Image 1 (cartoon, rainbow, N blue to C red):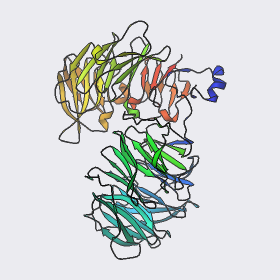
Image 2 (cartoon, rainbow, N blue to C red):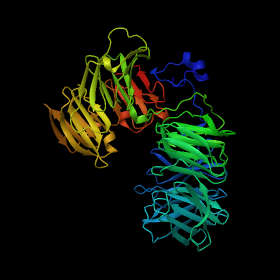
Image 3 (tube, helix red, strand yellow):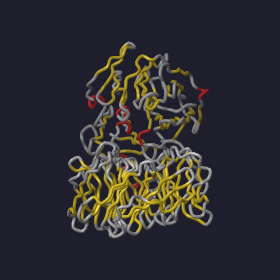
Image 4 (tube, helix red, strand yellow):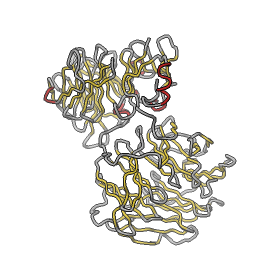
Length: 611
């Protein structure tokens, strides 16, 4: 049932299947181009390849272990259990293989102090621990580490602290420490070069390569000063990636991605798009270059005689970072709790492919159903399109251009769609009877527009009560890093509650209780609304009003082990890994329908579970 529409599996066996569920909308047309997928319980933040291309080491946010994977299948080969504390506040660990790929070393905390811990991957035994105290006050939020070419020394550089440290592995002694404070825009590029390691700093017109000897007492010395593009007028907000061997510099500045051939002083790539994010990567020989977008797409360019040309756009599901294998034959993409592997020669894209700036994060999925259960209404948060889908056929019927970014939507009892925009609430009456396929509506067709009053600046999330009587928004503060919660009367736009500080991360998970009791939940706090008055509750049992497990009005539920159960408790269906996301706003129940975010277009999967 879950096989793509064009797959051989579906063509051969669809007529023989008697599933408990029907896919109404959103099945992928074909299998993905990736060769392997793996998931972890939390966000994968640290990934590294072995120099021999055979292994990948990963750890995820909050983990106490490190997994070593096979680089072809992503199957787990070993699980390492460090004595270290890998994660502390904003500081994250760093992982590196020795030059012969036999030793894996992690940078973490032991007894409250920074330390290296190493393992022999052939035996699985711990190979040693190095701990130290530094005279520098270090945050260690962005460390880079490198082995010497002979594997006997380790160099550390922390860009945020402008500190360089060198250690002898055999003795565990700290050999040298240097401060590079005052360097212009230190980058995070660091690599071994003979008996030294090198790093770069970037100025407005030059890039400087520095060298530190592993066994020398001398501080960093300039090796070479190279030109940068002449039209770079400011380095503020610039993100860079330097590739030593072919001497290429990738820059991301003001929504433009550039690759600069430093030796020949010319551009190999210039791509202007508001959608590009800050993560970039090269293959070790420079033949391939990748950059991700804010919408979690990944674009790969390939070297040609005229520069870099677009080589491919791997299929994705909210991946934001990439890493090439040392030989350039593979690329892993990771973001959220999932990681996928592709062969770099295994995907292509049409030359007409355009870059999209539309957000495509899994948690940006919005959906509601008409009271009669005949229509589903879907949208992506911060997009301006709202689409209605006929649930009997799975065909999109009406597309609405809201004329504003959509942050929340609701279909109420008289078949009216209510949309929350930046500072307004807009409604449309849904057509009755047979809808015309691909019909379109615009903002001018709306029946009503109510402007929200009060301190509404930078809406981040929004929710509408089941009766469409109240609107709740979290907004960005102009004076602090916190967000604030506001509640409005949807009929007048008047603010009846405002200014409640909300933690940014927790504020993403709030909603009106599905029972319609006008209780707003976020974290373990809530508000009851009665006659336009708001009363705050400090402690609320979230599970009692729609948390884990998710339930529909007919008794279907998703358990924490990801099985869909019918009311009698019989297992009907296990959710694929791509649907197993830990956010409650990623799934919506309505009667016997279950909707989940999945893929790009039509941007959702809607299942109908048969009783």
